[in-house]
Length: 392
View 1 (spheres, rainbow, N blue to C red):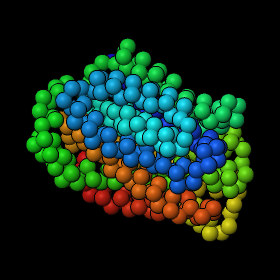
View 2: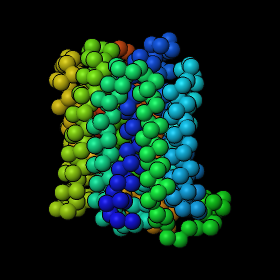
View 3: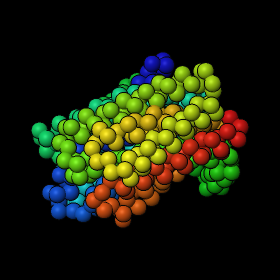
View 4: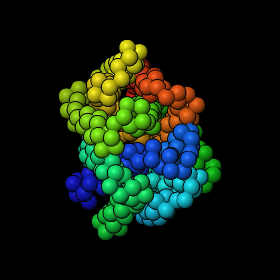
């Protein structure tokens, strides 16, 4: 495959995650109201999906090491398409949560294989640059999600908003079926043997480089997840923004993330992975702390809060490229398993954060602000401490 096709495939395979998490956010308050559900139930459509997404990767990863990336991608994208269409037809919040969980499980195949195929084709340093290009494509897709979701929710209702991801997955499935070539050079016929699987996981979990970069990605995603999970309620319900206006507001966050991915590639060439992550940690800590301080100061206007969100998003764009490539870097023969474990731990953080938010939401800005503040500081500590000490 040409490098252009690889980047396009990465953009679609990684981009399915923001399509799943972001596109329906402008419609979430309307979904909650129509079903007469609680905020905690509404949060399950996101946190439950992400937990299934994380757990499923523990299965998809070894399966892809055994049979290859292509068959796993075909199965996962086909299952996702069906589940997304079914979620649009749900007649209760409970049914919607179930189908969203199935979506998350199927989505695990796409994102896990995207990270693994980068290690199949590239060394870690070059892989970070390539995956940052794919994440730039993800950012472009994410930029369109929220305004599109707001428009679809306003013009056609929330069911069409939930149907749109099925169309995206069907397009990705078509690309994989027609153009994608297998990237795994030598499948491991014993990858699914329990003894081999346990030994592989033990080796991965014992490696400090895996932990440093996985915690970097997970902490940064914890902050982003907090924004995704709470922003529609804060900006639409609490501050009175329209759905379309909220979508435009979040586009500005995604544009900052896009800048972060491009800036990351510049930093990787100029100063290398460690220094890039150190600089990213500064953006994470500054953005999270600023959001917390603005909340304590009583700032209650959307655009007054957004500078802090922009700073955090720039750091996230740096950390995801470096973290995802760095976590699988030491494991060229088990990239699927390493990608799966990294993805599972990242989503475990998101699920825990979603559960905490469901318990602490009080109709104010503070749960979102304090969550982003916490994760911004943790991300910086990992970047400035653990990552600087490990071998790349």
